[in-house]
Length: 308
Image (cartoon, rainbow, N blue to C red):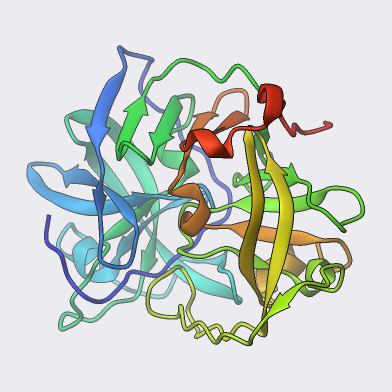
């Protein structure tokens, strides 16, 4: 896979297409990009591999316009659909790929969101594998080992779930000084973890202001300047327990779209997820979150699970 310097941006809302019948588990090696994404080799017909990132924060698979044009896409701006990114709802064109494969595993016909790119732009990602790439399947993203298993064993615990409307992975977490559960978007398409103002207000421990520009390395069409760094202590999510972690605060449009304006909420990105393993059943919607490092395991292997 080519290692290049600009990142691909996209997100998608819900639509599901049938996947092929369950087969023996397929294990695919993931590569790490300079910006921190984990990418899998994707083929379109005989062409590829192209680096696509598995993205639990997107319902639709997405493809860079330059790559889509090489495979039959012509922009007419006639078929536009709403797509929710972290910072805004935007209008995007669609393109159906009829012969998509993940490694040697056929994915079949996939409806994709086309992300505008220019021919001179060097891409770090050529696409994102959203929920509709895995309809009916079980996958495990083992980030510490940089492996992806397709048609894996189903999760034993319900630590998170696929939202039935938006088709993105959501869960709940707990932390010291926070009343009740924290709403969580578990987003393997975001390089960093971000908390909303409602959560930041409940956290009294703060660190010096840190401006983080993630506009060119994520599914974010505009630059995001975080407002402050706050500390989550005694953080629990699924089977993961952390003594403390510093995260950035940002008032993002996706929090409004999820209906999380007035409740503590966060986007958990790859800076934390890179040390976890996620098992997701796209048929039942159940997902399991396991820690990589032994020190991240909850005492007695207790889990912070969803209440519904």
